Length: 194
Image (cartoon, one colour):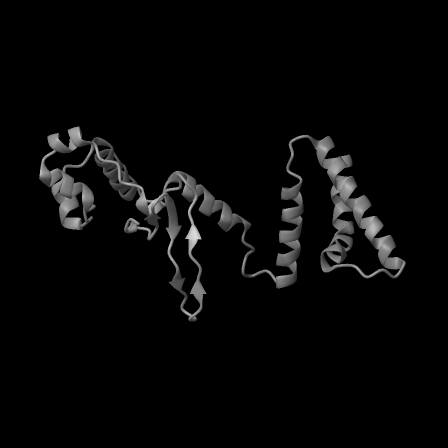
């Protein structure tokens, strides 16, 4: 009989049969010897691909540099020259800093200031002003017919909710809010009808 040869994964060749040898589990029980299918090679036993021609051409220092990845540090990055795109981006950033907030940001800030309620108004009027402003902003399509249709639809939905409430059905807070806006919707419809 020949002596069994063992691979990296632990598979032994016993003549013409390959087996995983018997072993002991952590709990003390014994794991039986198992046969391995012919032709199966476990991932641990697969040899790493090497190209002899390229390995011979490459100097030994480049092979070792490929094995260990370079460590990124601020000192090494400052010594390397910057690319054209990096230089362009730095110039753009510097220009933005010099200009300050852009025009789009300034106009956005102005719009936010305009929509904020004034501090001298009472809280109830401020809330009413914002609800009408949001109601008008919600229906901002250019076509007045579309606005009218949308307002009529909302009014119908509010009326249906009111009927459900009168029948004794409990409604959600959002639904109650829709019912409370019925007067506003009717006023907006009257404005658009003129």
